[in-house]
Length: 292
Image 1 (cartoon, helix red, strand yellow):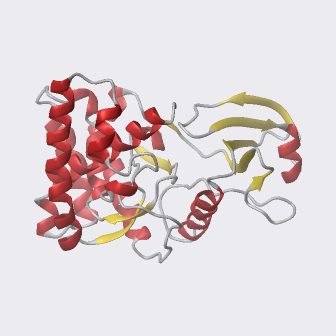
Image 2: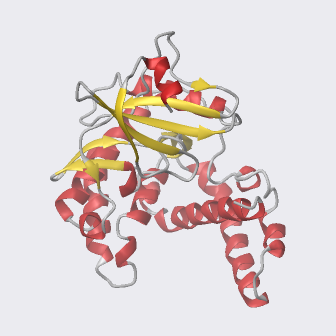
Image 3: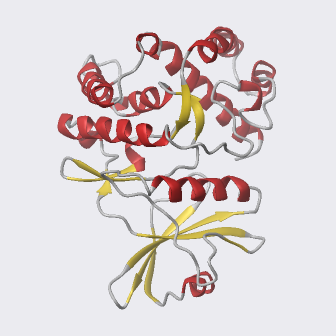
């Protein structure tokens, strides 16, 4: 890692691992001067265009007047924002203020839930002003291209070690969702979105959101999808208890108070939540078939 940090002329005194994502690892870098950075390493080269897009998006988004910080990569002494040496893609960001908010008690703390809803509305409003088509970008509802190894989700089910009853149930659910989805894209507004706004991807201090992280899945999709993704994560530990509705209501009201949705969008969250689950299932089937 020291050889990477030379590109930014950083002399670390301590390097320690941070919580890492599915596709990358992150390291906390501390210097003698007391500065702290996050070094993100993504193995391989196949994501170069996608990561460069993410960087370009963050640079443009940082020019908006947001109430929270963004993980904008720093440029090296040669002016690059991303190093790629054939084995890894490396970016360096300043450590942002705040701490993670993934604990169940924080996910369900209503003042913080409302603040998270406001922050997402602010983020989506800013993203709507950007015209930045993503390379090889796929909407969540484009099931045939959600994962390279799963061009036919229904056929892929046959390759899973499932009991016939399980396979038939999943087939019926996927078939229903795939039939409903084209109509959603025909009639609902679309825009550039974060598409992965869960508690693990924000930092907080008290009841305030201080940073929004991980724009890896950013792309154009149904505008209401960002709200639905968030509503699938914030009350996840309360689902089925009847207590989830208070969290859902607090987040949804805070979001729509700052970003009003069309009446048609307010009627479709059940279908969009199923769409999101189907896209997630297809992605995980693909990872399973890839041995990941």
